Length: 448
Image (tube, rainbow, N blue to C red; front, side, top):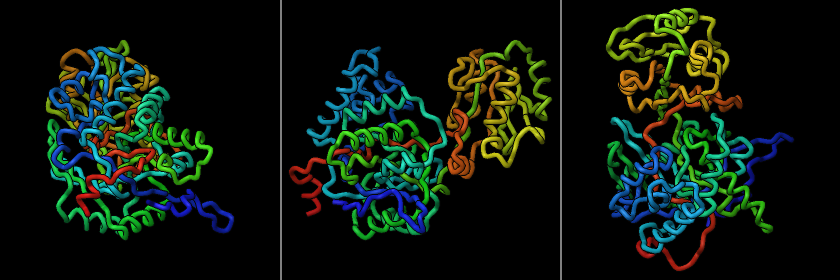
């Protein structure tokens, strides 16, 4: 069992608090190799109940029965009904009883690799430290909504587990790269192409104590980790862990609930893709008046009927009336020295959506919708051509450096700024908040 050393989130040097990232290995609960493709699923929040019901059809082993348990009830059942959460816990236990999920016999780290369009990124699956989330060592760049936090908190509480991981980035580290390469040069534990998206998913177990120690030490030298995707899951996991600490009169600080499951990728391997906007009307303007209004802050160039993609920072693509336009923000309309002011999402929100179209709150205004860049700019054209939307705006993607700069300065990005792809597959490994040490795991028997 991991001793945790002192498990303190800080050290003291010359009366100065030095924060550092604390992680630990954990006894993952995961499917046998031959079942992984049946168990693994997309994350709970990228599809609705009916889509999950369809994807899980005929597959009793699908993780959707745990992360979207409303599919086991009649269509239309409220996914926030207490009996739905209870069904999640019932199914999670059933999966373990039937051997569809099996706990590893020792604490490990894991490598999870994703391949999309010929590019592979390699993440370390770790237990992230709850106090690091609370004290800002785990840095955020988005606001969270309490209702969404509470939904995930209920799911964590009832299952007493982090069923799905969160997605972190960490500063590039050559030592960690070498350890990951050592394992990924071997045969993976899991290796499959996910149906639907066609992305590759591979998984290795890091079980050698010297490598586990080296990974823990390397993270301890990092001043920060960064939430890339999964702000609500991170908040929920950390808040439940903090709850359990308060409820435990004998709390020590090394209990399993002090950690939550995260897949941590080196920042240089990650790509943020565009996150675009479509709007239902022109706020009472004609197309000609709208284009004329844009002239105040943008150089507007008509590009014709072929799809036009933004060419760089501060260049936008606009689709209106069967034509594409290039919009280039004029000098003086943005501040390159301001980590928020330099963002194209800030420029477009202030100077187009707010000033011209009257959209003040991106979170609540029903006139606007958002389209992840994974769908391509053709999706923007489709939604405008259908008459559902009047105008579409495509943005140049945010960089990882911009994201980290914003998190480091304690700022928050505007809503719907980043879109990471591929999404983490759920069900490759699960982290229990309380471990019950009973009979040896089947995997112990196999190793012995």
